[in-house]
Figure 1 (cartoon, rainbow, N blue to C red):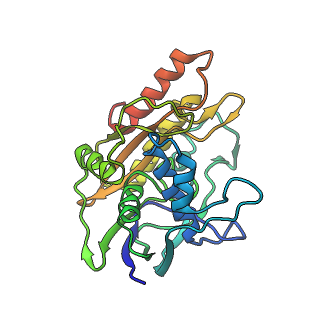
Figure 2: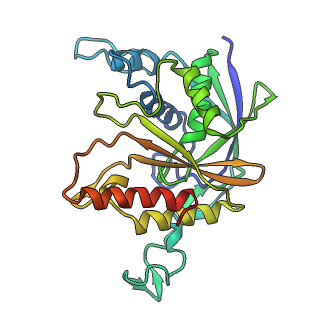
Figure 3: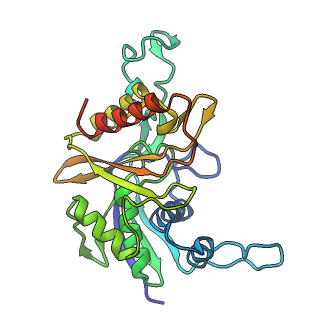
Length: 291
């Protein structure tokens, strides 16, 4: 069976674990789940969305008597060359003076804990079998807009494709290139169009100003998340929802660019709608290079 081999590099700490929840482990299902998320995000135009999704990614037939449907492709991760260290999931709490209102232990913020992670420059090879152009392009899109593991909506777990079948892979990061890539996967999708779907489909993509250090960028993202906390960025006053604002990181020419994907918000307007909308916009601008 013919296959495609992609060489990949991790560019921000990746919190992805095995069965014990503590030992870093990079698993194909985690990656396939990320692809499934972004496939749905750019296919709100499909009438039979679930049926099409199941035919590609696998799933049940829809009722108890239906047989499970196998995925149309498989992933296999090989040649993992990991660099493992501990890193703060909340890097903006590194400096205890930053969150001077929280409870401290021995003068340090209790939120400055560290978890084991796959660190930048870890590499792995991914085999897609059989060869599948749509899945290959979807993987490229996922590597740009998304990530794997915990805190992936806040810049963690990002990876990039270095080569495809031993041919060097280069992607010129700009909005037109992203739109072209999305159109290659789904020619009918229109970025910015309102679809009658109550799930997080992609509405907007913004590319921010670069920094020389991924640590600096992750701290900036964390600070913005803390300062402009609102239900419209994932926080809820009576709980927590998945953030409709997805922040990823892309490395180009030794600089790190924040990419913000705004997804359809699935919660109803809050009682403080105007203030929450303002905080959401401030959150985005703070990361892009504004405040």
